[in-house]
Every structure is written in C-alpha cells, then in structure tokens.
Image (cartoon, rainbow, N blue to C red; front, side, top):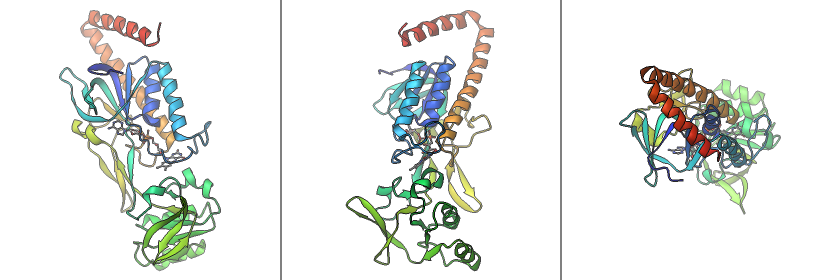
Amino acid sequence: MDLQDRSYEIVVVGGGAAGTSAALSSARARRSVLVVDAGEPRNAPAEGVHNYLGREGTPPGELVAAGRAEAERYGAEFSTGEVVAAERAPGGGFRLTLAGGAAVVAARLVVATGLVDELPPVPGLAQRWGREVLHCPYCHGWEVRDRHIAVLGTGPMALHQALLWRQWSPRVTLLRHALDELGAEDRANLDARGITVVPGPVEGVRVEEDRFTGVEVGGRLLPCDALVVAPLFTARLGALAELGLRTEPVRRGDVLVGTRLPVDATGATAVPGVWAAGNVTDLTGNVIGAAAAGANVAAQVNSDLVEADLRRARADPFVVREREVADLVAGERRHGL
Ligand SMILES: Cc1cc2nc3c(=O)[nH]c(=O)nc-3n(C[C@H](O)[C@H](O)[C@H](O)COP(=O)(O)OP(=O)(O)OC[C@H]3O[C@@H](n4cnc5c(N)ncnc54)[C@H](O)[C@@H]3O)c2cc1C
C-alpha cells in the first residue's frame, strides 16, 4: 500500500491485541484508521494464548490475524512497518515516518506498542524465552503443572514468585543466584511450602538437541522442566518519545519492575491527541485486558473527534458537509461499493 502523505483520523502504532482492537472499534465508529505494526508482539514465542475467553489456547499469530481480518472488514487499514520518526504536523495532528521513508498524518494517535521484556543475562536463557523460560503462571502454569519448576533469584520478587508458582506444582526450587542469604522469615515461608533453596550463581541454561534439560549451578546440571524469571518490563516508545511522551518507573514496594507510559482514566497520555492502550501503559496486563483497553480507548478517541467535528461544524458548516461527502465516497471505495 502506498501510504505517502495519506491522512487518517486515527493512526494506531502497534498491531497486537490492544492496537488491533482499537482499530476494530474505530473502524466500526466509521473513522478512517490505519494500524502501523512492526509485527513483533510480546507473546510471539508462546505456543498459545491462555485465559482468553472463547479462544483459549489459540496461537498468538492466529488470534491477532483473526482480529485484523475483522477490523479490515469495516475498512481499517494495516501496514507492516516501524514508526521511526514522529512530529507535530504543521496543520495540526501528527506526522509519522515509517522505516522506508513513507509518512502519514494522523489527527489522533493511539500508542499500542507494548513492552520489551529485559531478561537476566544468563547464557542460553533468552533462546528458551516463552518456551521453558517463563514469567507468568497464568500464561504457562497449567502447562508445567506438577513438573519441576526452578525460580531464578535475581531480586526480592523471586521469593514471591516461588510461593506463587507453588500453586501449580509441589516441586519448586528457588535458585538463590544473585540473592543474599535468606532471612529466617523467608526460610520459614519456603520450608512451610516445601520449596527447596539452591545456593550459588546459575552459570547457564542447559539444552541438549533442542531439549531444555535444566540449569548449570557450580558446573553441574540441576535438572528442571521450567525456569521462572522476573524480566524488567520496559515500555516500548521508540520514536514516539519525540512527541514529548515520557515513561515513568513502576515499583512493587521498593522493587523496580519496569517502566510505563502514564495515562489518565480514559487512556489519554500527557500529550493532547495521544492515547495509549495495552502493555505500554499496563505492564501486567494480559491479552484479553489489552484487547479491552484498545476498545475502550477507541471510544474515547471517537468522542474527542465527535467534539472536534462539532466545533468545526459550528465554525463552518459547509466545510464539514463537504468533508462528510468525501469521507462517504472514500468509505464506499474502501468497501468496493
Ligand atoms: C512469552 C509470553 C507469553 C505470554 N502468554 C500469554 C498468555 O498466554 N495469555 C495472556 O493473556 N497473555 C500472555 N502474555 C502477555 C501478552 O503478551 C500481552 O498481554 C500482550 O501481548 C499485550 O498486547 P499489546 O497489544 O499491548 O502488545 P504486543 O502484543 O506486544 O503488541 C505490540 C505491537 O506493537 C509493535 N510495535 C512496537 N513499536 C512499534 C513501532 N515503533 N512501530 C510499529 N509497530 C511497533 C510490535 O512490533 C508489536 O507487534 C504473554 C507474554 C509473554 C512474554
């Protein structure tokens, strides 16, 4: 699709669950909407999306493809690519440049760019991410139920994780790794739930013939079926930061868990005309939550555009009617009528 200098009422950056859902709702609200998506959703390595009512276990790519087809039926447009530059457009709205050089103009923006999981730097760990290296028991716990689950101690969250994952298996080991010697209270809690503690740093993840066999501690294999880690969840803003969007740290107690793009209750960011939905603003949100957030934000953006349309109609009714006719013709063309 040749996008050069095309204008849309709404451009959504990011076509995961949040962005695709925002596009579906926006297109059904008869808004012109483009989704620009770099095609790297966070859960891509997972074999299925769990806890998504009505589509339990569907492969991540299949779920998003189905949503995209639904949005396209109502006239939403999708473009594969990355937004690499963003600025205010001279006539109002925003101008986004895509890798490759094409630029589009948007009256309103929805940021649905997700987050990056920054993984602990243990050799071989990243290669098994989303397969046997896991973080979320609601996403993967059932799949490793009753198996031997090892929890990597990179920070205080590891104790919480060990006790949480114990719900899914009686065989949980806490690998102390970077943790200091545990206090008496923590030891008592782990003992009470039968969680064993292994001292010493983890030197690597052991894989034999593409089969995860465990972790190396003190030069020896500690066999296990899954390794639980606590990534740093980093909001993915990229070039959109050029619009003045700023992330903020997110802490659980004293522990830094990541960064997010702050929004108000309607999903609006601090930059007028820009909304956000999904993991970029809600670090612990799941797929169904991201889809819901996208739909909610789309309604807020539409309300804002309804008000803008009204202001323009009061100022110059003729111009608005002309624009409505042009939109109607463009919409009919899109639907092949
Ligand atoms: C391994 C793993 C397994 C998971 N399993 C589950 C599960 O079973 N169930 C569940 O509910 N949740 C699961 N999750 C969480 C789930 O991945 C997120 O809740 C969900 O992906 C959030 O959707 P999103 O639309 O906000 O972001 P994403 O799905 O990450 O989509 C963001 C999109 O934006 C694009 N993008 C980013 N920057 C740009 C840019 N500058 N220009 C253009 N495009 C851009 C990306 O390429 C990506 O396609 C899992 C997470 C992981 C890591």
